[in-house]
Structure formats: C-alpha cells, structure tokens
Image 1 (cartoon, helix red, strand yellow):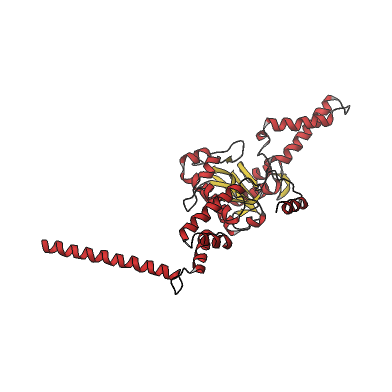
Image 2: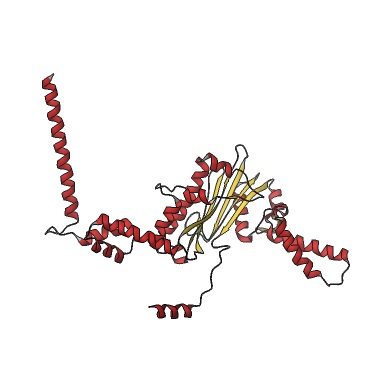
Length: 359
C-alpha cells in the first residue's frame, strides 16, 4: 500500500515538473517572437500584434507602446481607455448616415434595425456592416428565445410592427457576448465616428396564425443590409408576393397600413389645411364638403399602404392586388437611413476658417 502511494506521489511530481517545463517553454517562445536577437523587444512584432488586437490606428499603437515601455497589456488598456473616451466625445455629433438591416425566419419572426454613422464612407466599412448584421441577429434572437421579448412583439399596433424599446435594443447580446451598446462603442473607437444602434422594429407571429413574411432591401451592400428596408406580414399570399409587397413599401413610402390606422391628430392637421384652402372660395357648403372629402381620399392614397397604386400594376390599388391573391396584409414596417434626423447645414468655408483660427 505504501509502495503504491509512493509511486503515485512520484508520478504526480513528474507531471508537475513537465507542466512547469511546458509553461517555461511557451514563455520563452513568446519572448522570442517579440524580441530581437539581443533580447530587446521586437517592436515591429508588438506593433503588429497590438494593431490587429485593437484595430486602432498604427500611430496610436506606436505611441501607446512607447509610452508604456512596450508593455503590451498596459498599452492595450491605455488604447481602450483613450478610445472609449474619444467615442464618448463623438457621441454628441450627429450621425445621420449608416445602414438598415432586415431579417426574418421560418417561424414568423421579423426584425428591421437601423444603425447610424456620421458618413457614408464609414457605412461602407466592413466592420460597421458587421455591426449591423450583429444588431439584426441579436434582436431576432431576442424575439426567438426571450418569452417576454416575443410577447411584447406578438401582433402589431395599428398595422405597424412595434418599436423595440431602447432598453431591449441596447442590452441585446451580440454573438461575442457583448451588448449592442458596447459593441457600437467599440466600433466607434475603430472607425473614429459616432456610431449608434438607433432603432429597431420586430414582429413575432402567434402560433397557428399561418402568416407569411416578406422582406426587401434597397441599395443593398450585402445580403439583408442596405439603405432602406421593409418587412411585410401577410396572410393568404405566397412568400414571393409578400416580398413584392415589401418592395412596394420601400418604393412608395407609406406611413400607415389603412385609412383607419391614421392617427386622429394627423388627419385633423390635414383637414385644417384643406379647410383653409377652401375658405373664401364662395362655393356652397355642400360643394365644399365634397371637395374636402375628395382631398381626404387623395391624402389616403398618398400615405396609406392599401390605398396606394400597386407599383407592379398601377391599374389596381395594393388592397385590390392583395385581395386578388386571396390574402390580407397584417402589418408592415419601412425604415430608411437617417429618416427623421435633423442635420445641421454647415458652411464649408466657415468651417475651414474656424479650423485655421483655432490652430
């Protein structure tokens, strides 16, 4: 018994020695990979490694390493701190460019997400586009796997997909475990612009509803990502026809699904304009009322999805085209990059003069 215990102790000691030798060997290999023949740090190797790790500009990488005696971890922390601080400063700048992503699945989930940048140049950046795809996937996965999330987006409100709350949107998890808010900040550090996940809309079909989802992206830069996108939820039509309805939504920019979905305050605002236009016309009251009714119908044809002329056959309205297919539209959402964001008009000459004055 004692002999067996002694043998086990010896074996354990040898295993520990082997592990220590392996660790020492790995450490020597790492030092060799980042050191010159005389044992000094291999500066180019460290710069390359840290550049790939952070995505920071090479000038910043060199400065951080030099400031911290080529201690990679200290330089990494410094770059991250500097980057997040810079991102916080950029957060006050207007970001009205960017991209929209859309996705659906075979289980009746559909999401549309807008992610903003300051310029179109950054919107064409691979890293920014990856953020858009991550945002779409994160929101879609939330609808799929989070019962509370799915319940909030089961069905529609006045014919529209429901907006995802800011809390849900910013806390949604990307594939690497980061929240979308943190991933957007990290992307802002890399691309050096204000980047934000601005808004999202989602739909979760109820069990047994037999709903069909159609999507369309305009100005696509990659599958499911572009300058405009739409999602349409319908019943009784093919997926191909639902996709055509989504194309119509992008092309005609409807604001509401049907006339009964128009908010009363929006309708009253239009009516007040119409009444002002007919005041003093001298026409009898009954004629004025007919004129007003005609203008209201014209307004519906402009802003209501089902009242618009179908882009693929302008001899019929969308409602008639859908009815001919034996179906109905349940809800839709159309999102265009930067829509609703006020952009300050800047005088380029004044900007240059101010830059020269302050340098």
